[in-house]
Structure formats: C-alpha cells, structure tokens
Length: 303
View 1 (cartoon, rainbow, N blue to C red):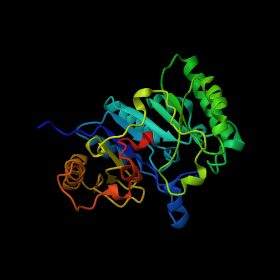
View 2 (cartoon, rainbow, N blue to C red):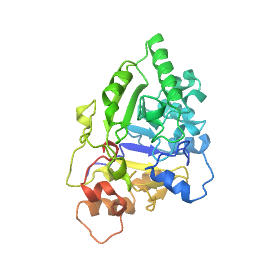
View 3 (cartoon, rainbow, N blue to C red):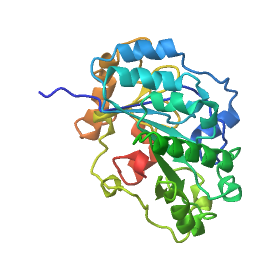
C-alpha cells in the first residue's frame, strides 16, 4: 500500500487578528469571548518542524488569524525553507507588512503572499476590512514589487484576493487595472459559505474570476482534504479541515505527539472511511462544513 503523505500544512502562529471583518468566524468568536492574544514561540515551532519526517509540498501560514502579528513568523518561514523545498505561502491582510524590514521578508524565502484587499481606496476597502488601512497595504505592495525589480527577483509572488461584495462589484475593472499595473495577480471571488453572507452578496457577479484556470472551483463526489491537508492552531491542536470554524474536532496536538502519529491515527482514519462511505454514524467535522453540506467542493480555499 502506498504511503499516505500530507501534502499541505496550514498553521496559525497567532490566535488573533488586527482587523474585524464582519463575516469572519474567528472575529465573531473573539467578539463573544475574551481571548488573550498569543503567539507561537519560534523554538516551539522549530521543534515541531524539526520533528517532521516528511515535509509537505505546501506550507501555509495563516488560516483564521493574522500571521504578521507574530514577529517571529519570517524566522519560522526561513527555518522551513532551510530544511526542504516546500512552497511557503501566507494568507494575510498585509496591514502589518511595514513593521518588518523588506530584506527580512525576502530573505526568509517565502514564495507567495495572498493578500485580502477588497477595494481600490480607503472608502471601498474599509466597508468590509474593518480597522484596515488601504494606503498602508498598497504602499507595502509597491515597495516590495520595486525591491524585487531592483534586485531582479521573482519571489515572493504577491497575489490579491479581492472578495466581491454588493458594495464593490462595480469596481472590478478598476481594480484589475490598479493591481495589474503593479505586476500583481488578482483573483475575484465570492464568499457564499458563511452565515449572514446574503446581505453582502453581489448582484451581478455570479462566478469567480481567477487568473489560473487550473485553480477554478470544481465539484466532486467527496472531499479530498483529509488525504492531503491538516490545519494547526497556535496551541498545536491539529484539525483535518480549515472549514471547521468552531474548532470542535481536534485530532491531536503536535506539542504532545509526533505529526506522523496524528496523520496516521485513528481519528483521521475514521474520517477518511466516513467520506468513502466505509463507515457511518461517526462524529466528523463535515457536520460543521458549509462547503461539504452544500455542494461537496474539494477545495475550500477556492470557494
């Protein structure tokens, strides 16, 4: 039997965010609970990384929280890149990019930033990205792109994820021009999977526009994520899916057990058997997943 290898690790190295986006499940949790900001120390992260027997193809920083709040994040990325050839990526609102030296960012070896930026100026941006500063983000993008040009660098790739809402769908063409003039990729996507999204949904924009056709959303008979991906929170808890917004289904903890033990453990085995209809009546995170319940898409990140 072929060995089952985890292809993607997505990790939150903090438990907080500097913005308060209305549909963000983590923001809603923070608004109801008192959460003290915590960052994963570099030495703890290093111990986890050094214990990996096989490195994934993709190592993603940022899931439900803002990775740039952790001042050690680029040291962590540099450590990953020093050990293997994983493609290192970050999901970020990029408001805090200017708190790091450009040299430290690029010397980490990070390959890509996916930046949530849903406007063309402060007025259109702040309607959803509450607490964000458009000009601050835009200036950081310009500086990094200029640094890359001056030093003949291809990486990191900067990509914009522009969530299309009712209030900004008329700005799509202007946004294309604005960001493409900087040499930045931009994808336009809806967000239909969160509670309360109905009031935000665009009227005319009905299909995601992506630069890379191979990454378009697609339906499938079952979810493939438990065969290729894990999500880890700041406390080291391992979850099988980034769509478990309530974080109810811990499958182990990397600070207590080896990653390999968790990945090949009973909880993951039961979930895979459930999704292939080999067992039923078992409690799985799919019950919290709007993507699975609604249409069975295989990649939540591309919805």
